[in-house]
Amino acid sequence: MLKIPKSFRFMGKKWTVVYRDIPDPQRPTTWATTYFGPQVIYLKPGLHPDSLAQTFVHELLHILFWELSLNRSNNIDSEKEECLVDALANGLYALISEKVIDVR
View (spheres, helix red, strand yellow):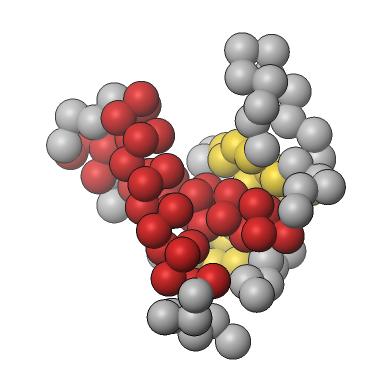
């Protein structure tokens, strides 16, 4: 099982993970959101542990895209980024949950 930290460092920046409801009337099924300025990932509380872990991986990939300028340098709009991040997160989480990648 993937353990989600309360905070972590990535590329020299400290990120915080906070559990709270995500009010987004345009996307009522949103389970998480990432804010790059304050370096915070908000995760919706009460999700199934597998859904929570997969969502966390998804948000980490958004951070990776941002920090490596993958979206900006490749003219990837937010809709395309979301599709790419979602596919990669699903695949990466499958590798983790099926123990192809051991995260202990």
